Length: 151
Image (cartoon, rainbow, N blue to C red):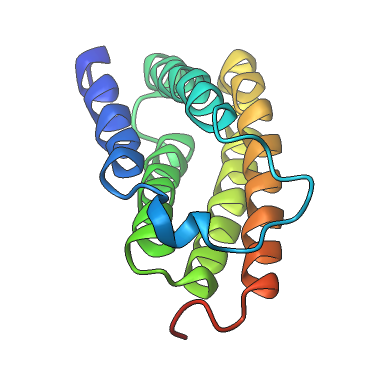
């Protein structure tokens, strides 16, 4: 797998956030006081997507297609699905399940990648922290707005 393929996979994943934007529905939801400001999301995600790509490349270079790379690919799928579920389908419940699976996959990647590439594992630590925050925010918004979406 070349660096170009890895970059394209990360770009495709990132595009989910551009396709399924918060919009009026999200702006009308009650959110906890600790919700990050709107400008923080694209800034943080841009940095994280660079780290995700670098981590994937490092593991690919060190090991090729192994368990760490399969976890790396799985987290891309969960990552891409979240915006579609939360903003596109307005399914905060399913989005919470998805983001929880994303966090588990990220932690799994960190644990499995560490012996292969310590740098790749370290690059995923901020990602894990941000996704843990996102999962908590997802759950909080869901609980604050029980009638805002189907399901």
